Amino acid sequence: MRTATRTLADLTARPLDGTVVRALGDTLVVRVAAARLRALGCVVETGDVPPPPDAPTGWLGVVHATFVPGDRALPECRISWSGPVGVPMAGERDVQAACGIMHVHGRATGAPRALRVDFASVCAGVLAAQAIAAGMLAVLRGGTPVRAVTSVAQAAALALTQYVAAATSDPGAGRRPLAATERTPPFRSADGVRFEIETFAAENWLAFWTALGAARPAIVAGWPPFQQRFATATCALPPALEDAAGTLDHPFIRAAARAAGVSIVEVDEDATRPLPPPPASPWRLRAITPAGTDPASGPASHRASGHAPLGGVRVAEATNRVQGPLAGHLLGLLGAEIVRLEPPGGDPMRGVPPMAGDCSARFRALNRGKDAVEADLKTRAGRETALRLLASSDVFLQNWPPGRAGLFEMDAGDLAAVRPGLVYAHAGGWAEVHPTPQPMGTDYLVQAYTGVAALLAEHGRPPAPTLLTVVDVLGALISAEGTVAGLLARARAGAGVRVETALVDAARLLRAAHADRPIAETAPTAPVVTDLAAMAADPAYEALFETDGEAAYSRSPWTFAPQPTHPRREDI
Image 1 (cartoon, helix red, strand yellow):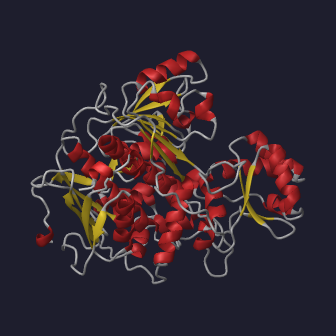
Image 2 (cartoon, one colour; image 1 turned 90 degrees about the horizontal axis):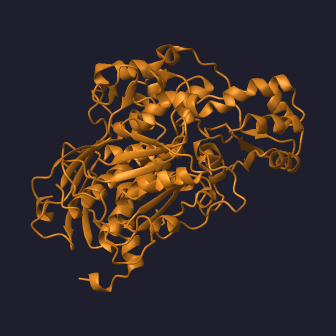
Image 3 (cartoon, rainbow, N blue to C red; image 1 turned 180 degrees about the vertical axis):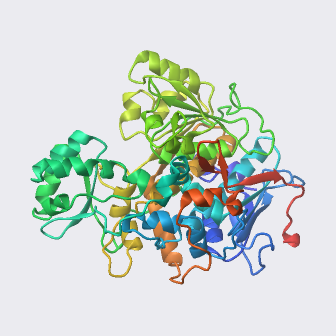
């Protein structure tokens, strides 16, 4: 047994060191999950034994842990393609067709199209690994060992939850015909450089296009579709904007973007740009308080209870848009109590149409079930409100841009004195992948720069990011996974833990999955969904979605039940 020789850094970075996991099934889902578990410190055993009949996509089970009594039951996870959906699916293409991914990805060009990476399978792999990690955390906290069940279809539904919410709160939107037209951006400069831009400010958009010589009517008309492309997965801009960009060389355009406060990146044309080596820990886990801290102290750290593995954990969340809120939502689905820190008057995204009652349908899709506390973090009174919440929390999750935590005096070091055992989780954009000064860390810029857009390019088409927010969604899954890893590290190392994940981690994972097995070009055998509202209302999908009477949302991608026995090697 090597426990005595483990350093604090080692145990923090690999919190499941001493754990043996058995993995059955030769699918990308299982390979992704196995790699994530190895990164947590697990030894993963594989073999030629097929998975159980009720887990055709794969099975994962913890068979030994040096830090758990030998007679204690340990967690497992069973994975299928269709899960609770009454539509047969036998692979990634079927899931993309039957669960709406082809429909949303194809909106920009007017017809359903396959996403040329195994996006749903990668998401399911991360969710399966997360179920095992959360199950081990429950065991460490004295809770019930769990048997988890998930599926690739449930992963797909989770990825589309905000689109389904919008379609069901405004049913006509799912049936409106889409224009069969190539969308922009990316743009191409006169010297042949293809580039993506990003801004959330109308005045910056106006200043940029004015500097490029575009006419004001085209600039004004282009702002709404550009601003809404994250929500609609479409972005048909006036041709005059593309024409204006095409008359100028890239150095001039870059200078104009910089002067206007608009972020700009070149599109990697063939996915060969070498990215910096990945960090030793995929979640950049490191201790932020000395060993010996009692992570169980404080009013928020209760013994695990029930079948939800994170029951009794409190998460304080200061996030916006997609990546951060979805990460917090996943932690809530695992049983944690989530309390959002929002500015006075509430998060502005609460009022963005389409509405589900008195709240944005998209906002509710990512934030339902969370409590909220309003605080102006630019003021001392607001920070004191936040610190009171954090003093009774196990996790602080934020996705602020670089520098903002320091401005608020709420970086990991600042909060260690308030809550020594805190898990401080930052869901960022670029990490070490883009040199400073970094552009905005958003989905489409990351897709463009890291080569994901090139992986998605169909034959005869230039690389372009999908307007389905694949990097935001997978980045959220990785952030939640890292937070669970941080809680495991805290439980085993007795120290507060900093967790750093980024959208570029999602891009790396998609590139690795594509290199492992490019998606098959075969046509799906499952029917292709072309109306999200109709899908959510179909009895065959009843177990995949829930409704509050105003809109439909994806249910939890996992179900948890007590694990009755210890899965032994000889029984598998």
